[in-house]
Length: 430
Ligand SMILES: *Cc1c(COP(=O)(O)O)cnc(C)c1O
Ligand SMILES: [Zn+2]
Image (cartoon, rainbow, N blue to C red; front, side):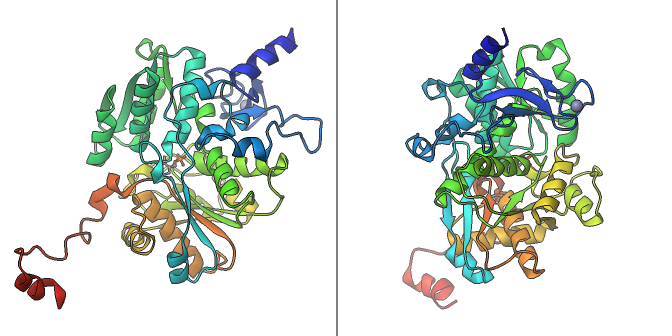
């Protein structure tokens, strides 16, 4: 009864039909699995259009149907592995963040058409709400009672908030030395927040052990055993950027790289839009951005390597501090295939770039946004980014979460008595 099974799956996971191994292509039923039994490669969601005999395959949704949808990621539900009735479910409904035409920053950098996709506008102020929203629906489908994750900071808060809204328990794990604002916000939504003495990579390893243990039974780790579903949430960044540009793909995108999941799925989303005829086909370049203090993918790119050698992170861009990035090799493939690059900037450039974006566009980015804007500048200076091509740079988090990065310069101009005399003396003439 293969047909009935497909119908059932289609109902529960929308247009998704299978999980398939990125390395060897082996397919698996849609379940809480994340690694190939044959070759240990990562699994990813496959859709009905991937195997379609039609060329081009028929899109399950039209532009008009998408445009008539809600102002959040669920307008793209026809392209995501979520249940048909996702609109009736209680969740944080993230996405549909602003695509800001950055005229001032563009002018300062000598660029013709620059946009900032500002994902700080999500419910917990980072892009992570997108990926968690998809993982929550998968967790419900699989009957998990607890949501969990290993986090570099933003994910922990996105998970505790989403669990609160969905009525699930949460137990999330972070390196103990994260920014205060990320610790506090993650804890504020309830659930259990656990600090681990070690780096993110230690936290992640610990979570993998927990999955095999009875202590982790019934738990959905959004970025481990739910990772194939979680990762698909990043496609919505590609969909939104294209729709907000009037259903066209920009020439160049600058994307931050931690594990590399977001960058690889933005590419997947753009390819799907073209494949399904939702946008005109055209070439585009994807550039990956890292902080020099944790730049294993950039280092591999520059050395011409296909493998990524793990590093021990040391950077203020903690949200991107993954020393052993799971999707690093795929980021290298995409940068090379599209004619982009992977580049890194040091922490002082990160801080300057946060300041530049704030001063020119009124957007206060977290350190990850400083990394992308810094890399944008560096690529322009070295001539690898075309200043006359349409460019989108991502800001994936809110500066309020990384205040320590800017307190050296973001201070009052003066503190004075409430008198004109004091003002004239201290501020007006200065
Ligand atoms: C998690 C995160 C990213 C991207 O992470 P990937 O692991 O590469 O998908 C980017 N920016 C911020 C602020 C993040 O928290
Ligand atoms: Zn495999």
